[in-house]
Image (cartoon, rainbow, N blue to C red; front, side, top):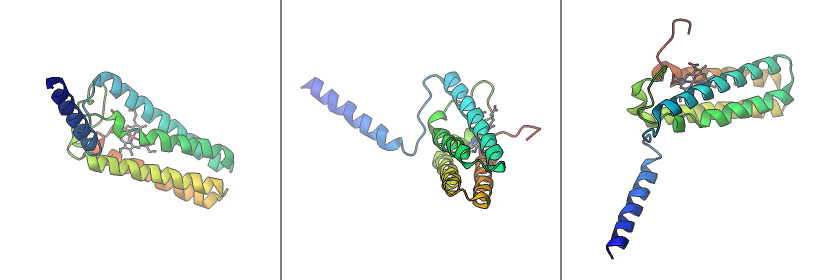
Length: 155
Ligand code: HEC
């Protein structure tokens, strides 16, 4: 019976952790590794943004689509790649993230939505709409960088 009770306790803890997971950042198992993955993801997002810019400039919307999809998918990963305590090594993430994790997630969601607007506009091959959506998307990046990323001189 002891085993069963322990089992229930663990299950309860797991359920609690799962429900809190929506709001609270998990602790990093390996902070340096997760920090590197976050930076690599940001670099890949940035690269995909450049592709959107180039291909929308050329009016090649078939190529805008995969790039915008990549931005949406990678951006959605940001909160999962930002567990508390992952501000180690060469990082510019601000610890405020973990005081306002719900807000950090909201900003992520907003960026993902903006990326979907680019996708929709590209599907319609509507150039002005693509350019407008791209600018909205870029602004949504800044909306998170301003409060949660330490500025660099060249930013
Ligand atoms: C929800 C918050 C959030 C959103 C949305 C977001 N970023 Fe970031 N970004 C960060 C944080 C935090 C860092 C700092 C990470 C670090 O240094 O550990 C960062 C870092 C970066 C970097 C610097 C990488 C380096 O090598 O130092 C680039 C480039 C970048 N983001 C691009 C983007 C682009 C482009 C978008 C929009 C499509 C975007 N980010 C959306 C939070 C965000």
